[in-house]
Length: 114
Length: 111
Image 1 (tube, chains in turn red, brown):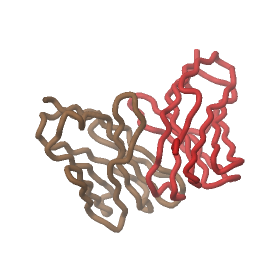
Image 2 (image 1 turned 30 degrees about the vertical axis):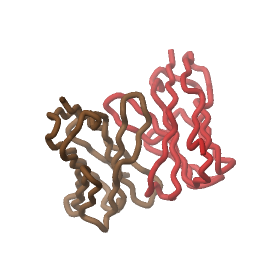
Image 3 (image 1 turned 180 degrees about the vertical axis):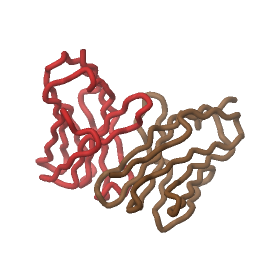
């Protein structure tokens, strides 16, 4: 099993550009989520999904969209990138819904917005 | 919604000493409290977790305690080793689907 796979690992964008961070898991997990990590602020939840066709907002959803058309994939879209979105992004999945089980994280995607 | 506060933000100990990291949470409905370790440049990984029907849980040199009345929980690492140096995150969740993390503690174990 590959676990949770994120692409790309690194990306540089200009302000106003859009892009999609890809996340795929091969563990048949129903629960998937996106976090951003900034120095001194821990991991902040952006969006999450408890199953295909279901998504919901986390702590910091503004400027991001998600969809969950399959169990395996959970892409994160930046609609119009801003310097404040410079961060490391982690996708994570869990076998338990309700975020009450171990989260398996991807390797992270480092995004810089100029 | 849930809010998790974590202290201290940095912690430096001598090898062999104990380390304690404390977290408080706001939502009394929260019932799951994991701890994650993140080594430099790596992804976070679960090291121990506790559910609200348990007051303490141990796994070798690591233990977690939970005080539901006071809404706080703590990570205890005994006999620290240099490889324990990392960033540690606490987190809390109820049944809302949201796992909320604390701000993180950078632990340095000096040989």
